[in-house]
Length: 147
Image 1 (cartoon, rainbow, N blue to C red):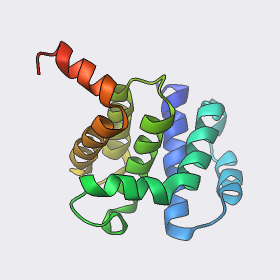
Image 2 (image 1 turned 180 degrees about the vertical axis):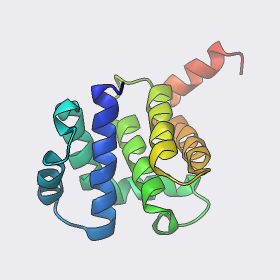
Image 3 (image 1 turned 90 degrees about the horizontal axis):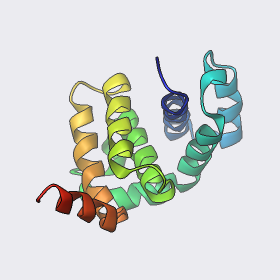
Image 4 (image 1 turned 30 degrees about the vertical axis):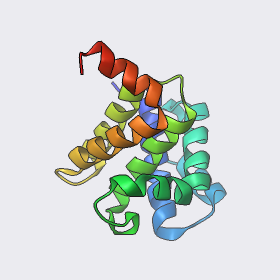
């Protein structure tokens, strides 16, 4: 059974994917998502934050992710691009969620909706991005592991 937060991330991914392809307004995308089966089971507060925040900051987050990508963000599959933007948004703005949880959730999204090996790419990119976005948290975890 999926948690309400997992469902929120899935809907946010669908919305951001749609935005990346069409550049429709966030309001139009949000209205469409509200008619999708299962919407009522999502954490709507988290969904709203992820969807609207990711769309609003997508271009800046894509630029921030660029040093960790092996090609321009525009050349990524739209699913992987959307997963990375959502993950980067959560790492930047949802400090109450441990960075490893954010990365694991992004990996699960990539496994479910992305290409066969896309989850590995998402994991590697977000792991490097997390070290920049949350250096103290990452350092503390690595110190605890003897790294």
